[in-house]
Amino acid sequence: MEQKEQWSSKLGFILAAAGSAIGLGAIWKFPYVAGTSGGGIFLLIFILFTLLVGLPLLIGEFIIGRSTQKDAIESYKELAPNSSWHFIGRLGIFTCFILLSFYSVVGGWILIYIYKGFTGALNGLTEVQYGTLFGETISSPFLSIFGQFLFMAITIYVVSRGVTAGIEKASQFMMPALFILFLLIIIRSLTLEGSMKGLEFFLNPDLSKITSDTILFAMGQSFFTLSVGVSVMVTYSSYLSKKESIPQSAISIVVMNILVAVLAGLAIFPAVFSFGLKPDAGPVLLFNVLPTVFNQIPFGIVFLLAFLILFLFAALTSAFSMLEIIVAVLAKGDDSKRMKYSWIIGLLIFVVGVPSALSYGVWSDVLIFKKSIFDAADYLVSNLLLPLGALLIAIFVPMKISKERLVEEISSGSSIGKKIFATWFLLIKYLVPVVIVIVYLDVLGVFDY
Ligand code: PFF
Image (cartoon, rainbow, N blue to C red; front, top):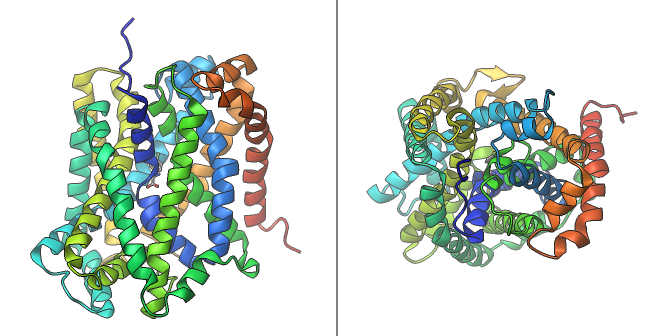
């Protein structure tokens, strides 16, 4: 049998899985959803969901992938032969397809901003002018579609050339660089006048602001940022060697992810309040606020450009993972097919994403359930498809994988697996499914009286 290509090192796998996890979710989406959903209380619930629900699921996906060494559909077929459980993988593929269609729109915004940064268009504006410039950029049909196309073209090109070659190398220095730049922005943001109000908004949980939406959005956000529920992590861990520890890898990814989200919040909210902007501006928040903060730093434009490039990289490594799982299923290890399917699927995703790209401009009045096309696609993915996939995975793992196999997978590579097994098992078998169902019942109003 052909030897499955494996990650060249443990670090390679962690960086790629963390690369999938850390992206627009933590850097762009987390701050604006926190801004519309109550600030500190959202942060608290998000962290709880990530640790108690997201982490057990991540470990579950890693176990499915590594124990079978197969893709997002074949792995379920191997563990539960002659059954319909591989539907979980199909659902994940569909979810990634829709997800990447609007994710690439935001990727395009970053590309356009990088271009504008180089032309000097981002130098020395006021906060109002930055807001106007961004509004003009995303409402231009040409710019937004062109940016989205370019982002997809890069994604397709890298994925078509195979998984380890492209992703692993670059991650090693990009992530630490992103951390450093974040620290720089945070220092500036915190030293602006009136910034403490922002800190208070972001870090002080106000219990009275909890609504069923806050809880639903925090749950969706924790799945979104960890890339769980779609079997992307099943696919990535299918390349992982048996020598590595699954819980250790999962914990380090979760910790990094929470850290990036907190850093993004610390960078943005103090500045938002200091400039007298609104924290609930929505998807435009980061793009309106950060250029203004960088503008207050000596040589700010250089740092802004560096930040945008790292931000682009973080978005791309997540995008690769979404396209990768679809292509892996279709190409089944055949390199010539990989090339073909990367382009076919990638271009289809681009086409499906065009309405999302237009929804900030010419199609801004097209509404689906009172939401713009972009917001509706995001809502469908984050709050319906990801939790559904997560629920099915939480049911699948304890039911279809024997306890001996679970213990073996979780404890290979390090001693912490044995210690946490019982807790993990309780969480994934009981807490995760129960919590997801309760959140839905709550949204449907079952607990209202
Ligand atoms: N985790 C990515 C982010 O936070 O940007 C988004 C994502 C990537 C979600 C891949 C799901 C996925 F399969």
